[in-house]
Image 1 (cartoon, rainbow over the protein chains, first blue to last red):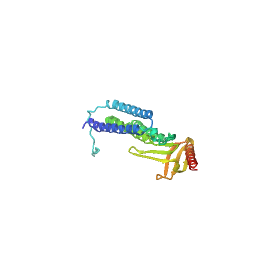
Image 2: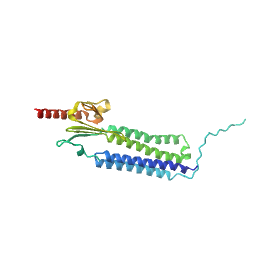
Image 3: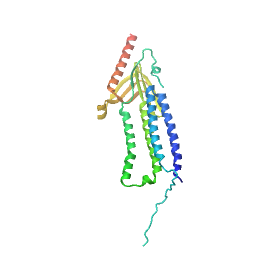
Length: 82
Length: 179
């Protein structure tokens, strides 16, 4: 199993994040009373999201995704023979 | 977008107060998010301090995990913030409009004519609320909703006094027209 398999749930999470953000923005514009504040909140959310995603992508790009990972089911124990 | 003018039914009706929560209501989720944001930094410095090879061995997993973690913290904060921000209490010269966003998909909108208001109580409890000047207002009405409570609003005493004054004015106007 290579590390790149982890990217599939990550991409699914990003899609969920985008969907949830859309719902939030819908609420902001549907139920808010002030247009300027709605836009301000939207810009704030998008800016923070872009900042976090760019930091994430910068960190992700440094990882060797072809690296194989193995999860040991049992810890290896060595005994000293007398 | 909701326009305030849509809420005004009478010709001579005007908005007296448009209230949202006091800033302390936003500060608490912000503080919680800040604490959550700091936890991985502290954990990372502790792990590197004890010479753990976790970051070297599981670098990719940790990177993805941190990305998901920080995006979730921001989403949690923003959702909580919006849920608080969308709570609105509007007092007009004739009515009280109460809009409460319980969660993202749960919302209560109620309105009550001011002449139905029987009792207005404002409470300021605790050191922080006394220092920062926020509190709760409970409006007892004769309607089916019977009671409105608006939590953590600024200057509750002024607001309750204004409501009482508006109710008195309405009753005085009604008795004048009756006689």
